[in-house]
Image: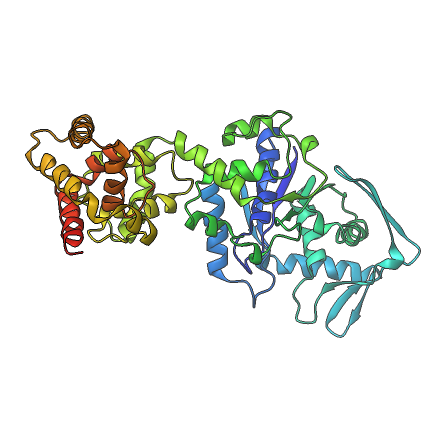
Length: 430
């Protein structure tokens, strides 16, 4: 049975590049009935932190990626010492103080076949002797990586192509220890939009960053899967089970992929549109509570209606909170240009007439609000925009919102009247 692994180091948060590597390993395992191992490479006891480990595990679970076995390298030092001692006793390694170092033969050529890149050949005279155990007794990366991959029965090593330089060094150790060399698949790196390696200067790079921004896990997984893998069709939206059915290493691209935040936003927006409204509201509740907009007594049907009103207008959860602030705040911030253009003394009487119509209306629903507004426009002998645009600015603070009749309904009669009163009072004082 094939066996693959993802081996993050808890010296930082889970990067999108690492998450994509994990995803490709996971998809290969689940699509082939293979074993997927999660190995925590925490041999650097100084830099490895529990907060990073917790974030990595939590991010993977959030993405829906589970594992069959979990290992920590920090618990396997005895195994590394045993294999280093074996090479020392066989004369394949030597001691330098307390360190144990593998002796590389200069006349050796290392060849290996990469599933994506084909045959790769490296002359051993370009490789210096390899540290197995450092002077403090901790294992070097290339050594413990080989010992673990072999002892765990890894058949395929799927990792970033920045590891190609490590592969010949590791093959030498595989062969020295008498281990079977696995198949290698070095996937291209993820680049920023300026075609340089994706880093913090390009913005968010950690999975937890995108989570905080309001990206849905299904959307991020979908986007990462297509970042360096081609399904063979024009289709762009896949659920995780659909990715499992479709994924193949043969369709992994050989060239680097560019992380496009705008495209991720589009994918996330598509998932938001498709998400059941009750589930979407459940995701938004904590954000609205953190902002102080609502408490546990919120009118749930009202909130579901508001979410449905905006469902096509936001592509991340935080954006919904930004767009709808004027529904929850008694004091709204007016766009200065819009205020100067539309909230002028000449519109005062029309706004007051509209307010009075609302006060005396027996019914308050979208249909009645629209009928009332259009009747008033006709009564005043003005164009509909001459009333609707000032109304929108007076009630929302700006010129962009969903339909004004729906906005009025979800604001509620009392809040609309209160805001119109303030605007009218201000205009009459001019």
